[in-house]
Image 1: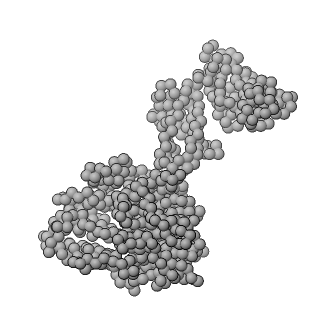
Image 2: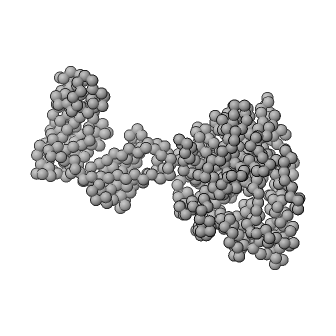
Length: 636
């Protein structure tokens, strides 16, 4: 995808000092300056064949291959150039090419060098913080099914924006266009394809000449009503460009435009106010409410080459002042191709955040004015190639991503995907410790319950007292922890967007529940006018069972109490049923019936004397069970 990723538009600078140019490299350097990387590579190779290779030539040749994503040759010539050079950016690109070629250990070695040379660089900081990030990305599970789209051509095809049943892509399949020196493919145009009832697409149709010109056009986005289209185009069309006085090379920018739907076609093309001949703006994405446009730009004041910005779309259609999304999203590398989905999730591509090589797709979300952690979407959306232009229908859980990965039909292809699992998840690390010694407890049972109290998964802690679970982001849950000879615990946990969440649970010895002549459990509440044992009641009664198993001589009398609602005679009968249900549960867990008796107290022994003005909470406190030790126990 280098043909758009840098075509749209990165000002190229050699990784080595320009004073290394000479008369021998003049022809190749001129081709390089014109972005004619295929021809420039041929010229630099001829110099090397003649014995005129040096660090500058090797570096320029590596840059040529880097920009057309020939990772094997780029790796080779970066390595050669770095034998006598030590430019940090070249080292970073070398590490990227190694990673793209699957040489992860060697890539990490180069990243260590880069980090030591530029310790304050965002990319270095992220690497030092998490140097073993690659296995985590590779092993986090495939959450998508990805298939190469049937409409791809042998040229570059990328994008994937749906509007009113049509799919819009950018493609260089138009053989009537001049070829672009970067990769010897025709200039890019915008096409639409119709979606068939079986989900396939047909009839790649060139959009009209109000949208497409003889220059590059890029990705599109639409207003919520589908009546306005936003798209990228080279500034040559506006006659905005700079011309190098020596090389005569013309340097354009990329601008954003909008057009209005008239009948069945598009017209009234307008340049957006964010455009400037001093920098590029590209990759538009309009929010689902139509009030904000996101885009990428290399305007001054950013953090890297291209950053992601947003701006308001005013009621009259004008665009507000651009706002940089900040250093959490943007790095000293490149962030491009923003896509803001219907649920407010921001997807974008970056080579500055930790990834698999080339550009990877990442996502985040703004919550209460703060940006959630930046997450890698993972495989198979991401590969060791360039992965970009991610779009998704959050309701249908399907969308498109573009990539120049191996196995495609052209240099860039569109891939259709279907989401299989929740994308955002949290690693919950539950550590169970002895409340007295603070030592980890091995073999404790930890159960994950969802927000409705349903048991999702049960695991045993390891020697470090650790049990791990994966939960969906922003979902509340509960951990139920138990262990022989310990008091069980239920720990509610508030949902989060953090990648990892540590929960520490301290279990006190079971004897702490025995206070004088009582076994003090957490209140066992019954629903109003009910006598059946609930899940919460069973959790507490299991502690009683555990104590009675540990002390086989202990004998217990269970008393049940009601609130004051209803006639006293009825409450007496109700409390008897509750007491008997309690005893029956304990017996069902293997305790001999001779060791536990039941007694219904009705409303005769209220815990809270509140008369006729009791709150629901006070009524609940009065609906309780108590456990009196008749004989036996730790004290004999």
